[in-house]
Length: 542
Image (tube, rainbow, N blue to C red):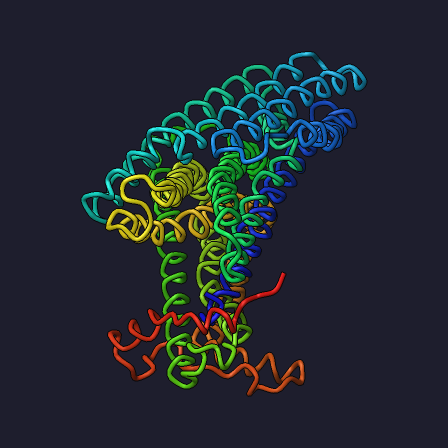
């Protein structure tokens, strides 16, 4: 409904989260694997070891184009047919990429076991994607079982979705474990980095699969706001449902590559730190590092979900304020201030992300300066392994809840506006914060902690002589960040307006932490009014 001030913010959020955010995550995984492969390859194979992964990724652009040209389907295709077309395109892209890996191996005169490693990496990506598809697509049992659980209430939907998310960890872990073991046996740690590069080598096609879901979601929102025929909305819903599955597939690729790349980066850190093999089971620092590393992904997920909740509360307060101040919005006589919501959500989200980002950066720094490097190495291992499993669970559970709602909207189990549909909507609201915020955040944290640890190894090695430098760094960080974290989002917008010389009144809005004075019952009554004349006055001409 275009009268809702939050509709445009929702459309912007799909672009920011599902396109820019996932694209940055996947691109960061690819760049990290390339850097790790280049460092390890130069040590063992010289310039050839550096050029080999770069040429694989370069040819991946061509294989992605082949996959794109292979995607086609009939008019009025069903969800299953659309998903099959995308799966066929991914298969074609992967097959062509295997041929290019063989060509790179021949041209650079690399041992042929690296071709086998590349094939293993490409196959691992396809299998992990298939696993995510099974657990998130409405064409398979897991999502259907979650939708069916909605007949008994929202609680059963949540519990069934959690169960399917936990189940999805098993197959993905088996595939990644087999890839990791096979690549190390055939090519050492450099082989693991080559497997990560091969897994994401056709990144362009993977990103295209992920982006189409966000585009279809926004197209469906525009079609509903413009009151286009129902057949248009049905088509966009089908594409959106497939897009939820492909989004989970993209996250699976990112997580698989993050784990393989994380293992290679951990070995680089171990080499730079000069850590030899040691009995980790009897080393208290190793056990403590593992426990801290296992704990951090859960704490980071909690902080990210809490940030989403606080931002959502601020949106609700602002929407209610606009309805109260301008009742003419509901009759179509006045337009809602959509830009104000976009600015508010942007400021609130940046403000809420300061603390989680700071924790992710500071913890490796503190451990490296004040504890032995064995503690930090164990921390990286624990965070990488636990982060992969937790992020896989969050991504697949969230996608399963989302597509369960879409499945009910097709008319199954009562269809739209039924009690089953309302139960699935509640679960889908939980799933959005899981799959779109917590899962990508944990995945990015895997790479970020490893990067920080590798870059700061020289400081860590001299921390016994320069331990006071650590106190200075922490003091400066606290001096700069604590005032920002304590400042309200409104104060940040005021500072932005002062720096850019814009009118602060254009961005003023209600308090983030205080209710607007109206009770929930009156607010729900206001939002539920939908007079036909308002629809006619707010019709979007396309």
